[in-house]
Image (cartoon, rainbow, N blue to C red; front, side):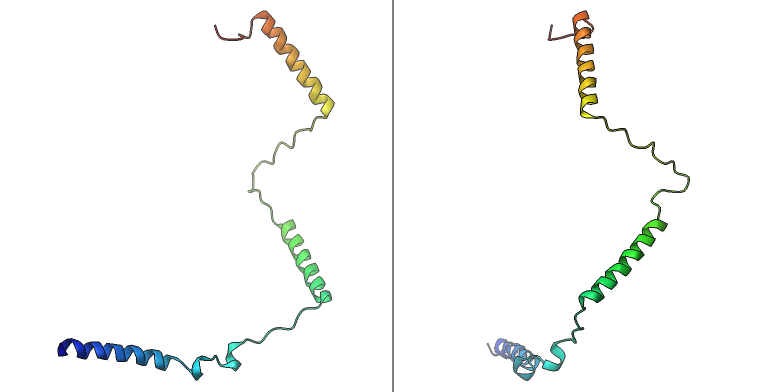
Length: 112
């Protein structure tokens, strides 16, 4: 029993001592070191000037940067967007062609 009691009491005493010595000034933070120095607030004019400078710098960077690799072909361009009337006429033409092919029997309809 004594062999178990002595090491156990030493361990408990050490745990209490570590927690007691870890606390400084009653657990309060040092007021001089607890807060960093805050920078002064920027005025709206300073913010606008900085934003304009960043915008110019970004535009210069974008103008100089190309996303294509050297020697890479450029795209064929964008397709011409058809008007609503053109799309309707093309749809009617396809529908008429399909109806004619169906009448001739070129398109099998239904299951046999």
